[in-house]
View 1 (cartoon, rainbow, N blue to C red):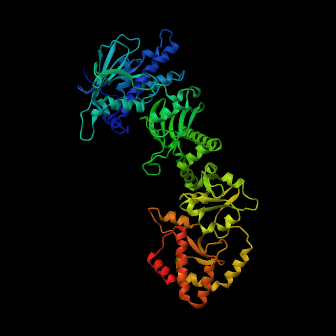
View 2 (cartoon, rainbow, N blue to C red):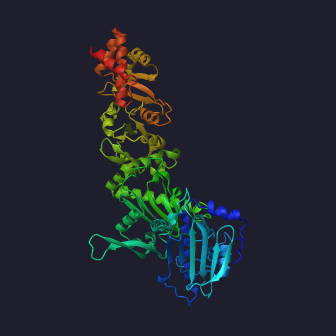
Length: 625
């Protein structure tokens, strides 16, 4: 029979569709299965208005047959089929969708909806096949027709024999090349994996002959293989079931089946929304942190389905970065998809869903914090750093969303506490929320700078994550209470001893000036300390950059040599200061020696490197001699 030319504009259009629209070749199977599902849906629609039709769901299915020897893959359905005219219009005209026309004429009823809209999914088969053969018999017709094509050269249609209503699409799979192994689309395990990935929740059975094994008769150890037909897909997605039907084990099993993680989820969130944008979602808060979570290889995002068909594996737009640990899926029938069903045409619906999901996750975390503190702390130990990063990120635009979810170790409670808990027990005279920074809790416990605040009986929050101080600087205050580092210049604590300190500073101005001269640009100032009680020396910082910030910023790959304005504080009530004063009167070289030792001692306390360790050890030896 003579070939007909496609009614599309050019050969180039088909080539573009085959080679450019889809990001992965395996998508072809999703498209053909979705088309088959559409064909069965159309019979269902007709049965709603035609009493002569009975829709027995058990009679409708999709079948996959792979023939390795002949390199063919057949996708069959028991759907509505196509007449010769429909084959001509739907397959002979690229980008004309029979499903879209049918959808326009029939409003969705009883939860069913037609998936296909654009009519190009069929042609994705040419990504893996040299030749396509379609045999179809339409409902109510006595005739069947065969449509054949080898691609952009055109197609032919001729009468043929077919016993039952429905459509068979046979793909002649391409030969392997150096770059592509087309054999994989004839391998039953690979085909099963693709079906489970994209089409697991197609509402009709997807059947396939698979290889199984059993013990040989009369043998205890020998097995024999045999073929049996199995239904590959789950059909009814868990998110479409009523919550009352489901148990915690059902959600845990779904989490494992979808390979969201190897742990058990701490909490699941099941969302059903009917309104302007309809969607279902199942979200999980994992128990353990993924091994690559804080690496650039980690991809955030939820699985996105349209009517049970997987559209995107990782839809990052559905989650803000600070909730990137959340796993799960969203299914909506109201998404506007592009021609390949892989990208959203407009993001209005997606933004609506994302906003709702963000609010729901926040409420669930707040509920977990209030009702199951132990479980929340377990979550926080894994993902608290990400929440604090969210406070800091994007110039603090989400700080109000997150401020009640973050926690810090408390000097008084000896455990994690919220900012609300801290503020609720502040003494009336306490002006600030005090914090101290360091690598570990044990190290902060020993910091000289904490002495005055601790002696006053005030609680101190311990910042041990590199993001902590940056987040608090962005937060600035909580419930009108400002944050104050124990290393800051003014602690807001009036002490009777301050007058003595100020008096001593005036008397020893020449000594402090000389020490500043010895240290040169290593410090901005040397002064008498108002905060030290038992320790002889400490470093504090003036300005916005703290000593801990300096450490964090300079540890980054793009080291910008950021320096905090350090101040060396001396405890004028310590016996070391008496030695300094005596030396200043008698031996300036000894003052220089003592100054360098005290400065290096202060560096060690802060966990900062000593510029010249050899010189430091030599100085210690000089003191010993």
